[in-house]
Length: 162
Image (tube, rainbow, N blue to C red; front, side, top):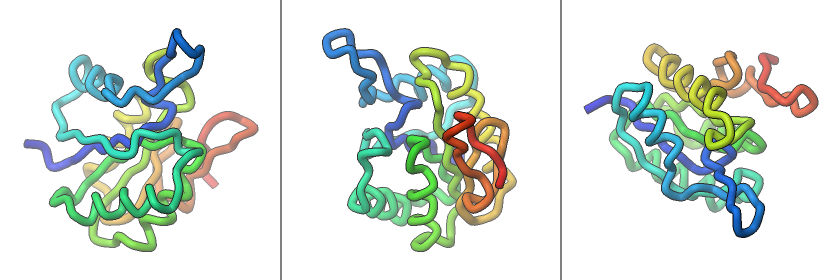
């Protein structure tokens, strides 16, 4: 068994086109992560909670995420999270969890539409966490580091170092 847990919370990474509504909905089956693992990666432990667009996250969901992490025996956790409020969840966890290594990642484009960015972000997060110390990090668009030093540039449509 691997010592890293991939924990999916929803977000664009997991969105799929719904032909009935014309919307991009969160795939609660989390097919994207399963596909990435089957095709390109070693097997990691995996779980999913919340399954929401991060714009719909509340402090209640952040507390649920925090409690899940506190109660798991995993010390290294990659969280797939929506990019719009990834920074808010990272700040929340930084206040409450100091004894684990957590790396947030996600996607600007759903895996179901174009798997390249989502796969690259997840792969980079999994590589980064191997040697990272306890703390909260973001790994997106070729940038990885403390959540305080990586941010979404909404105008450019990507994450950058600040």
